[in-house]
Structures are given as structure tokens and as C-alpha cells.
Amino acid sequence: MNHQRRIWLTGASSGIGLALAEQLAEQGHRVALTARRREPLLALAERYPDQLLVVTADLTDVHAVREAAERIDAAWGGLDWAVLNAGTCEYMELPHFSAALLERVMRVNVLGTANCIEAALPLLRRSSAPRLAAVGSSVTYLPLPRAEAYGASKAAVRYLMQSLELDLADEGVAVTLISPGFVDTPLTANNDFAMPMRVSAEDAARRIVRGLERGQREIRFPGRFISVLRLIAALPAGLRVALTRRRRKSEITAQQEAN
Ligand SMILES: NC(=O)c1ccc[n+]([C@@H]2O[C@H](COP(=O)([O-])OP(=O)(O)OC[C@H]3O[C@@H](n4cnc5c(N)ncnc54)[C@H](OP(=O)(O)O)[C@@H]3O)[C@@H](O)[C@H]2O)c1
Image 1: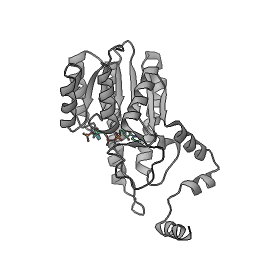
Image 2: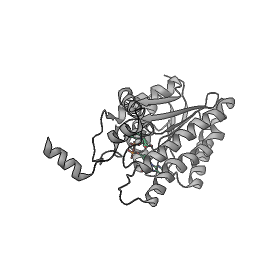
Image 3: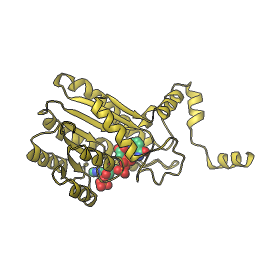
Image 4: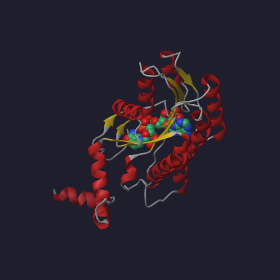
């Protein structure tokens, strides 16, 4: 077995987080599972009662997050890894631009992550090999239609983590940004558009665990998908916009009729 780590994992009730929790527990680590829904966390914790700690919290509530960290500290006296995976996605449906939608997404993805960072850092600083990781998204490589809120929130996570990496370097707290492509989870289940090169949550979790073990600065996958996004992003802006902009329904119908 690997060295047993003390890990705080958020978003552990579903999708990538649930698969990560299973794999980390399987490897013998101690994992504090956080999400709002208690049932899925309890179901997993029953299988690994000596390793898993259920710490429910709404991450947008700073007091709840502080309490969660206090519970982890009381149980384990510190943390080796914090893997901040919890997140949400809502798409903007123009012509109605909704600032309220943007606020909802920002509150979970940016403020929720920031609340966890604030609470986790004092615990991580007591570890001999601390690592702070957060899940961003491959969407940050290329602006996509309808992703005004989600993409902006993940761009904020990218900058936050990359800036923190600079400021935490002297203290020895390593920082990892995780940038997945499309992953088959409840979050993407209702997407009404093509999701090229989508991977399973188990596959995503395996790649994340491997990258964390290796101490990668950024874990991005699938490689080919990321390369395509980067290639399109590097094109002249006019071409990039022509390739990625949202088509009006009438244009799609006309195109389908022509084919
Ligand atoms: N799936 C993809 O294609 C994809 C691609 C790139 C990046 N990502 C990112 O990967 C991460 C995991 O996504 P997923 O696809 O696995 O989605 P998911 O299945 O919907 O899981 C999201 C998790 O976040 C938790 N969560 C959401 N809001 C919360 C809040 N306010 N407080 C506490 N926990 C909260 C949810 O738990 P509760 O509902 O129980 O609170 C759930 O455990 C997200 O950050 C997402 O943006 C996903």
C-alpha cells in the first residue's frame, strides 16, 4: 500500500468525486468526504469505516466549511491533500443574459473553492508533504458558447490556483490544477450537444489520482481533446470564432437540409 494520506475531498457524493473517493479509499488513504447530500457519503463510508469520515457541508456557507475543517482537524490533526472537486454547471441561454445564473455558478465554483482553501491551508501547513488541488476545466483553454458563467468560474479557479502556486511555493505547499475534458457524470447527463472524447468518471478519477501521486502541476485529459482545444484557441480570432460560435437554429436546419 502507498503511504496513507489524510485527504479532504469535496464533491464526493457524485460523478468524478465519488469515483475519486472509491479509488482513494481502495488505496488505503483516509478521506474526509464532503458534499451537501449525506446519503451517498454514508453509503461509501459504511464500506471503509476505518478510513472514511463523512463531513457534510454546503461549501457556499463559510461557517459550515470552517466547521467541516475543524471536524477533520479534530479527527486527524491535519491534512496531507485537499482535493477541491465540488462544482456546478449552468449554461447561459441568450438572448436572456442572467446575472443571477452567473452568481449561482460563481458562488459554488469560485467562492465555495475559496472557502475550502481558507479552511484547509492551516491544516495542510502541518503536513510534511502538503498538496492543494482544485478541479477547473478544459473549457478554460477555449471560450465556448453558452459557457459565459461556467467558463468564467473555471477561468477564475485556474488563475486562483496558479497564483496560489507562486505564493505557497516558499512554504512547500504544492498546488495542482485539474482540467478535465468531458466526463460522463450526472453533471453532463443532460447536455444536449456532442461531447467528443468523453471519458467515464472512473477513468477520470484514475488519471487524477495518478497525476496527484506524480505531483503534477496540472492534470489535463484527454490529451488529444486538450490539443484540439489549444489548436483552435491559437488560430486567428476570426477563424476561432467562426469555428466555435453558437449557430442559430435556422442555420442548423438550413445546413441539415442542404446535406
Ligand atoms: N463532468 C465533466 O464533464 C466535467 C468536465 C470538467 C470539469 N468538471 C468539474 O468536475 C467537478 C465534478 O463534477 P462532476 O461532473 O463529477 O459533477 P457532479 O456529478 O454533479 O458532482 C458535483 C459534486 O459537487 C457537489 N456540490 C455541488 N454544489 C455543492 C455545494 N454548494 N456544496 C457542497 N457540495 C457541492 C455535489 O454534491 P451535493 O449535490 O451532494 O452537494 C457533487 O458531489 C466539478 O467541479 C465540475 O465543474 C466536470
